[in-house]
Length: 141
Image 1: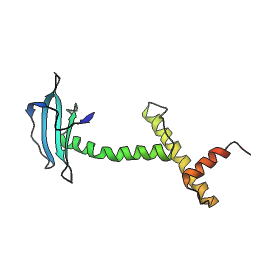
Image 2 (image 1 turned 180 degrees about the vertical axis):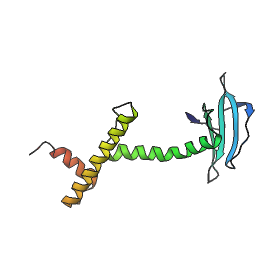
Image 3 (image 1 turned 90 degrees about the vertical axis):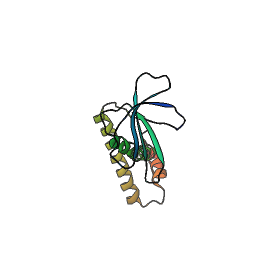
Image 4 (image 1 turned 30 degrees about the vertical axis):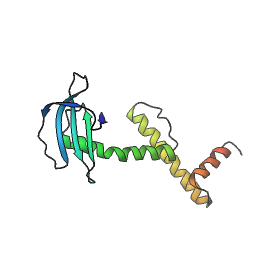
């Protein structure tokens, strides 16, 4: 679990850790507000020199791994947005990893089949409009 924080949040440093990556500014154990349980602060800069401050409860990862996980988060978010928009997966029906994979594979297979039908019929409609037509005429002979 990561939480991005602003510079306005007052942190009370308890311990500083050695930093090994050039992009990482700070890695420390901190307290914030009235909390009694310490959390980890990892502060780093990206390629465009923007500073990120992350609080996490993950002590088992290196500061470099935490930085990389946060950087890759955006690619994952973009992928899920694409799934929701193009595959019409609004709700994940299973809580198990295998069930989630099954639902995504079925949706991807359906998407591929719809694209094949769209290409074979040589329609000028967008895939979204074509899928709406398919839903409308699905139960008609």
